[in-house]
Image (cartoon, rainbow, N blue to C red; front, side, top):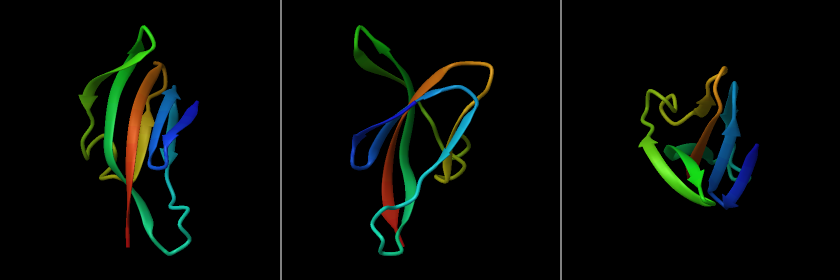
Length: 81
């Protein structure tokens, strides 16, 4: 499940999925991952866990939720040329 929570922010939940992002600006810009946090919703509120780094987001190219387990991550994007 992917929920867009802001123009540059997504909450992604699932198992065994890889998500890549593309800029919708139409100006040749590229979307990169600015931050990615593991976490959970507790009593309806987001509780952030560990901050993912370049090893987990493949240097800002995509996010991965491993198979065999359920996970939730918040991803914030940026654009560059």
